[in-house]
Amino acid sequence: MKASQETQPLTFAELWQNACLKVTDEFTAPPVILRVGDSIVGALGNFSASTGKAKSKKTFNICAIVASALTKRKILYADTEQSKFHCQRVLKRILQLANLPTDKQPQTLEFLSLRKFSLKIRLGIIEEAIYHTDGLGLVIIDGVRDLAYDINSLSEATDLVTLFLGEKNGLV
Image 1 (tube, helix red, strand yellow):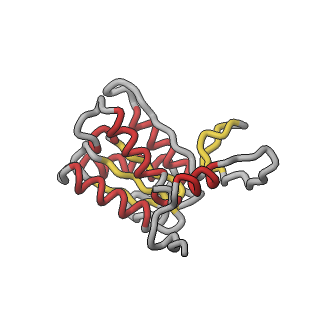
Image 2 (cartoon, rainbow, N blue to C red):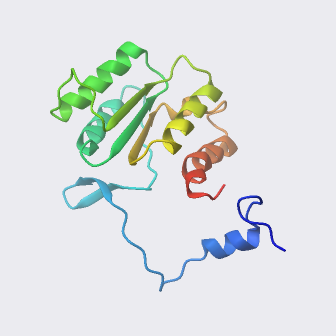
Image 3 (tube, one colour):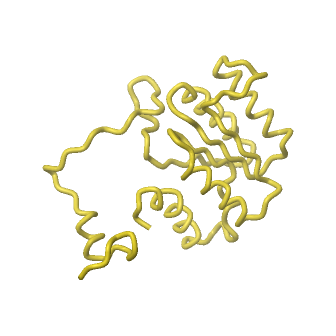
């Protein structure tokens, strides 16, 4: 008798069958979260990274993206680098760019200031927020490199991507 999926992980044969994609399969396009003109910049369930040199306005760019997405779905913004003072400045910039009041927290945006926590605690907080926030459509992690001990480790990078993408879909 075969054990249920709840008590035993899937076998590689089962995972292989689940991973097979056929040209005849039918899928519903994921909701578009961000669009610039006719170009789709972000769709629900996709993963992107914004990289650049220090002080190259990455955070400002992300603020504009978050501001434009505020009306679509719930957003989780996690900052691992800045003080609470500077995180609040980013939060207010997002609200200003979205033409929202800066004296009232929007229900569609949760902002986490994680600098004071250790790497493992940061990861745990982010994971908890991602997997237990209903209607989450966009996750921003400003300072994702602070979630790895060795920023040059391919295995740590792979583990992070797997953590954030796979587990919610029941693949890990």
